[in-house]
Length: 81
Image 1 (cartoon, one colour):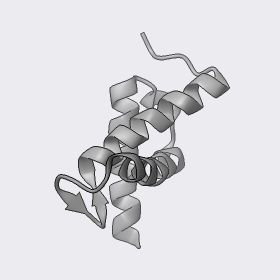
Image 2: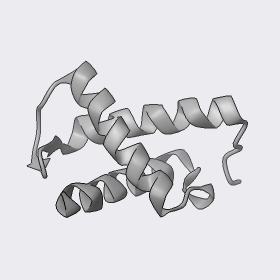
Image 3: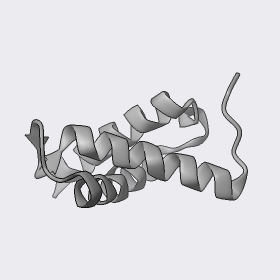
């Protein structure tokens, strides 16, 4: 359980860094983005590539990036310039 939260936090932080919206996200948001993004990515793209804590890394990061972009668009969060 704790390992999943740590991996989710890292995936969420990577997604925030890729989208330049990581500054506005806290740890809880990173964990949620990582865990929910992992579910989205693996549901759409499948389970390929290396896995940690039952999460396929590459589909999880792609899913988290999509999730962060959608949430940012809904709440009007701008990218840091």
